[in-house]
Image 1 (cartoon, rainbow, N blue to C red):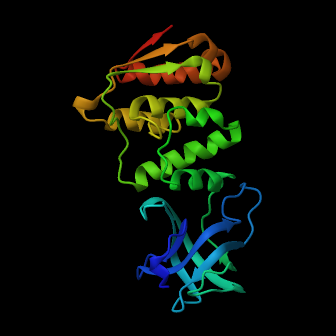
Image 2 (image 1 turned 30 degrees about the vertical axis):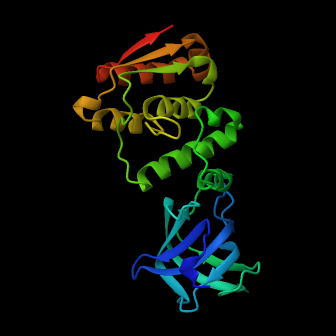
Image 3 (image 1 turned 180 degrees about the vertical axis):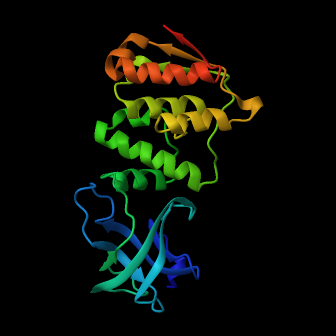
Length: 248
């Protein structure tokens, strides 16, 4: 079976010459805490190109869904091929280690969220609410990465001029951005992951797609959970760009 004919979740590509280097069903050591970096990243159930070089300085890791569409990407940089049990064409399980000298994802647990997004099952409204607080951080990371990888820009794509936020469901800053992205751009939608990104999304929306207002139910619960400083900063951004916030 040719390496480009299988359906992996991960593809390692040399950006410089656009060569497919390896494909794998799982990776270990890539989605890690900032304080737990290790040089080796293991690809599991992997197939490695027989023509792959021993190293590359322009590696990109792509996330592929069940329809063979690219839904996420990470620029890695320098990668040196290690060793392991390699299968070039067979379907047997295997493991191969690479030494990553460049970037990796510093949001643990993100691999599980990518697998969910790659399944082909549409993301449900409010699905992020079923996750733990740590998993919600991974969810927001995937939302942002996939949003731009799939060709979207910062801005509003939804049709509702006034969107609804349920303050009872927002207990963290991460939850606020998950809820706002979903309210503005639908399930899995992105509309900022911090205050600067929020400004970018509002400012970048075309005139006919400008966000007019937000209806924020149970606002007191959000204010207590998020803190006055963060709430005031959000309100300041909304006021600056003429977004009317109705607090109920």
